[in-house]
Length: 384
Image (cartoon, helix red, strand yellow):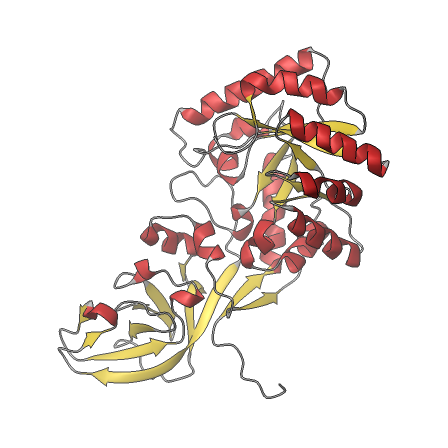
C-alpha cells in the first residue's frame, strides 16, 4: 500500500562497519583464511546484504548450518556475480546429499556412513565432492570421535569422487579463557591431525577456532591450522566471559518510537505484575517495542534505552508490544520521538552484549530474538 505507515521498530545494520570488522579479523589472524558464518539468515539479519558485503570485502568462505541456507547463499552470490565457497558446518542427511553435491557445496563427513553416501552421490553426479572431516573432540554433539577418526579418514580417502580437503572441530568452552578443557581439546585435535599427516594424508583446510577461540586461544590461529571461523565478532559483539583481543565495532542499532508520554502520580504501579511502583510523581514514556521485538524480559526494572540523547531507565515489566520508561529528566519528550534501544548515543552506548549480561546469555541470543516485525535497514556499504 502506497501510504502504508513505516515500521515502528527497526534495526539498522551498518555494512561499512561490517566490512571493517571483517578486515580487522582477517588482519589479526593473517595468514589464516577466514570463514564467515552466515547461518540462520545471518542470525536473522539478512543473508543477502551480509554475503555481498563480506564477499566484496575479500571473504572467500562462508559457513551455514543446513542445505536450504546453502542454496540461498549460493543464489545470492550468483546473482551478485561473486564467487565464494559455501560449506555446511553441522550435518548432512541422506536425502540432502545428492543435491548438495550437484550444487558444489562443501560437506561435512561425520562418520563412515556419510562418507560412503557422499561418494556414491558424487559418482552418480559425475562430480568431485569436497568434504571436511568433522571431529568431535569434546563438543558431544556431532562428528567423528577422535578415537575413530583415522579409520574413517582411511576409508573415505579410498572412496571415489571425494576430495578430502579439510578437517575441523568445535569448542564448547572457548569463551572461558582459563578453563582447562579447551587446551585439552586443542591438543587432542592436533595429535589426531598429526597422526593422519604421518600416514600421508594432507589437508588444505584445518580449522577449530570460532570467534571465542580467536580471542581466547590464539594458538588456534597458528599452524598447523589454516583457517578460522567467525560469526558474532563480525557484529562487533563478544561473549561476556572472555577476552576481547579483536578490535571490532558494533554493527547494529535497534530503534523504535515513543507511543505516549504521561505525568503519573506517586503510587502508580506499572505493567503486568505491578513490579514497579512510583515513589514520587514521574513522567513516563511508553515506547513501541516489547519482547516480541527482541527486548528481553530480563531488562524489566534494570535496563535502559536512549531518549532525547539521555539514558532512561526501564520501569515496569516489559510487555509483548510496549515498554515503559522513566523520562522525568528529559525535557520535551513527545509521541513519535526516536528511541535507541541499543546502539550508540553521543559518547555513550548500549550493546547487545549489555542486554545479554542482564539476561545471563550471549549476544547471539539477543540478535536472533529480534522479531519478524522489526524492519532490517541496511546503511553504508563495503569499503573496497
